[in-house]
Amino acid sequence: MKRTWIWATLVGAATLSCAAVQKLATGDVDGAVAETQRLKQEAAECAKLRSPLVPIQEEYTLGGAVAARWVKEGGGIHGGQLRSAASSPEARELTLYLNRVGRHLAARSSRPTLEWTFGVLDSPAVNAVSAPAGYVFITCGLLERLENEAQLAGVLAHEIAHVTGRHALTTYATVKSNQCYSALGGGELKGAVRNSAELFRQATRELGGELRLDDAPQLLARLMDDVVEDLTTRGFAHSDEFAADEEALRLVIAAGYRPHEYVALLGRLPDGDQGYRNHPRNAERQTRLNRWLAEQRPRPGEFPEVDPDFGHLPVVPLLKRRCGG
Amino acid sequence: MSKREILLALALALGAPGSANAVEVGGTLYVRAKDTRLLESPSPTSKVVAILQPAQSVVWQGSHPKNKKWHHVKAGGRSGYVFQSNLATKAPSMEIVAGEGAGKMDAQAFASSGAAVKAVSSGVLSMGDQRLEMKESILQLDALERFVQEKVKAEDVAAHARQAGLAPAAPEIATPARRKRKGARR
Image (cartoon, rainbow over the protein chains, first blue to last red):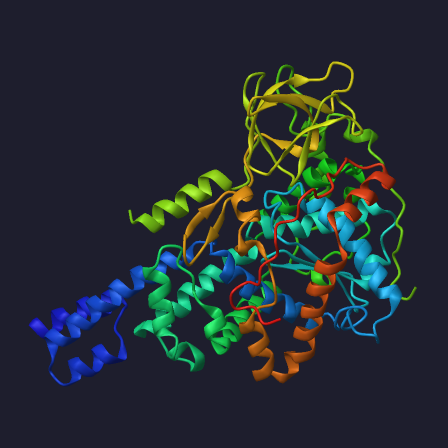
């Protein structure tokens, strides 16, 4: 009876590890219970890693890995290795222009002191992507669809908003917490994760909780794979996309561009296709944004968070839009 | 609740984007952009009274009656005008820093710390050594990062904004000494 009760308890807790099973199989009931208690504690520790507020050092490393993956998927950086003699002056100029526009926007974001990096991906697909730590990319295909700088600003601002909203970091935190649990013995052990138990323990113990990814490139690669897979198959939550759209309009207005251009652009982008497969429908995004713009009226006696004259802001011609020159 | 959990909850509460707070005359606003200029009069060419940094608090005295995009503020015993888009009702996000002095840092402290220096890290470069199909992408990203850091100056961003007729951007007055970030392989 006692053994049946213990089995029921352990299975009910859903934390029966291989070690606990082995102990139980050899009749070590107390050992199995102790092992299960340990796992429960480890699971509670791993749950602490579910916050998207990861230390900046960890964000740099994860962000760099995800950004490199976007570069690979996007056909490489337009111009290749931009500091090499083989890189074209046109590609460098386009990159400089993109960074001037992007940094002007990012300076008004909620993470103004992050070092933002904007790049062009050599792909005909119509897409823009971002990665933690302030990496933002736009494809040649999307650049060619833009009519003015206000539209470019809207696209970049939407991606900036994903970074400041820590949307990819929310995905990462879930992946990391799950892999922590695996590494500490509560699940199936796989490759790099098996050897990373101490790194996870350190991360759960220390104030600031950094998972030192620079010390474990294999673990970094595994985490990056899982994050990218999640982002490409499921995408961000629709609520995150809507939030990024609204924040994009705030940034565009704060930077001094006419916001309606971004709303208009959404109507000309592919719907449910290519990189926008997981986005909400563009018509719904436009409806929400038009409603948001209509709600932005200054209240007498209060500081106006949004420039009341946003309807009169400039559109600004695009200085450069074509990857081919 | 552990110290770490309290820290994270506090940082979330202080830094997460959310709905705007109503601020009336005499209320507190926060500087958003780096090197924001506090000017003697509501004009971008006016005399600079002080340079303000992100997360610095100012007291709102109201908008200029003729040019409502300029706001009269008091900042640490000085008063002057700041352009609208450089002010916000909420402080910028806190950054979380690990290692020595671990904890939350406001945007101003973060900007002047070594942690603000971003680079493609040693872990990412090592990943490229192990996954050869990623190698070229990582090298291109590293080159992009360094190219942008070398070539894109705050003055260039400000000049572009000026020429395009956008919200004024303050040129960087003093660049903090760039330090090599721990773990970065340059």
